[in-house]
Amino acid sequence: MEVIEKLKKTYRSSTDTSSNKYLMVPIFIFFALLIFALIRSPILISQSGIGSAIMLTAPLILTTYALTFIAMAGRGGVDLSIGPFMGFINVSSIQLYAAGYLQTPITWFVYAIAMGLLWQLFYALIVCFVRVSPIIVSLAGYLAFAGINIVILPRPGGIAPDWLLPWGEGFTILNPIFLLMILATILFYIITHTAFWGHLKLMGSDERAAFTSGVKINLVRIVAHMIAGIFAALSAICFTALVGSGDPLQGTKYTLLGITALVLGGASLVGGRGGAFGAILGALNLYLINYILVTFRFERLQSFVSDLSYGAVLVGALMVSLILPYVTRVTKGLSVMVFFIIMAFAGLFVMIHQVYDQPIVIEQIVEIEVNSSIERKVDSTGNIIVEGDSTTGQGTK
Image (cartoon, rainbow, N blue to C red; front, side, top):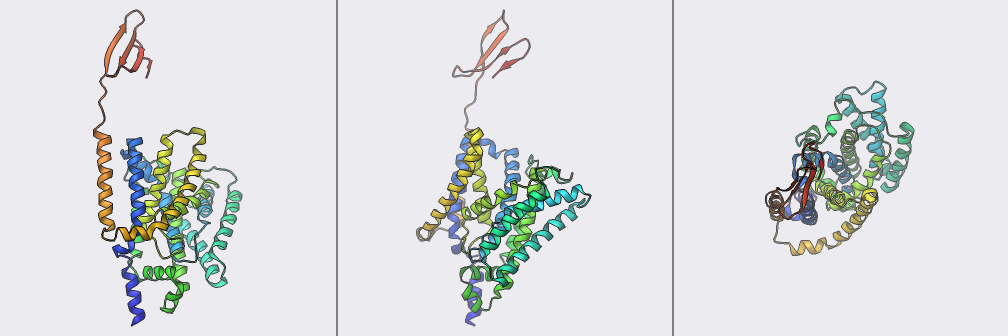
């Protein structure tokens, strides 16, 4: 009876609001970045801005979903191979499509998910039965897939199928990528309401206690890896839609991005803590950081500054995780939902201000030189906003 009560307590904690206090930090970071991004460029909340955000963050969110299940299992099992593995599905599927295979969406999805299941099953079997450290297996996979991708496709090339190309346009909010994200998130939340999720959390928190409680450690770990393989496959499909071709190198970046998003979302790298909402927040936080950096126009230094920022944010997020016990103690009487609503109202206020409270520019024709047909227009402050030839319509702003 004691074992059963312990398992029930673990299962209830998956939906207990007090166990989600760690989400307050990523929620605060998200709304702080969102407010600053809106101040820098309000176009973020337009249809094209939101559509572009969905298109760019979908592969990262799904990657973080996959990493969450592996990290939840404990033993410091962060899958370093996930980036090159996404690249493997990308380049291999593009090459198979060019060879006359994978001509329908069903065969494309079946192939990607099958590859995800096979790799993660192999990964889990080595960890469980050969007793090799997960970090060693994932590092070996990272190096192996990075090399295999170059062999399959030495340089970026090929083209995605016609049905997949429109997925990466990002002009609308309701697009196939968004629907795929919704289905993946629903699947994630269904899993969190099963006994398996409770066993996974208990195993990640204390594997010895889970074993003595009757949890089948190896089976839970294998299932967690296979679920991660499904999400990694969906992420690779979204990545293929995003780039529209095969690229043996770009997928590798998702290893660092995924781990950073995982930490920014509040998940624990030692296991036992994580969730879909935190994964979404972590990925969105990374997107907002990059969005803000783009508004500063670093030009040729943009890539360097972005990578530097990701590394700094990862270190900062790990440091912030040290104050989580203090945050939990201070906010003991405040629920995560109430905190989220308060921050959402602050973000909404800034959004309304940026859209509706901007000064209106009053244009005035202040000078017309008849002989040269030059026309100038200025705003109410006297700054020239249009200057050009009134007869040809050519001019500069």
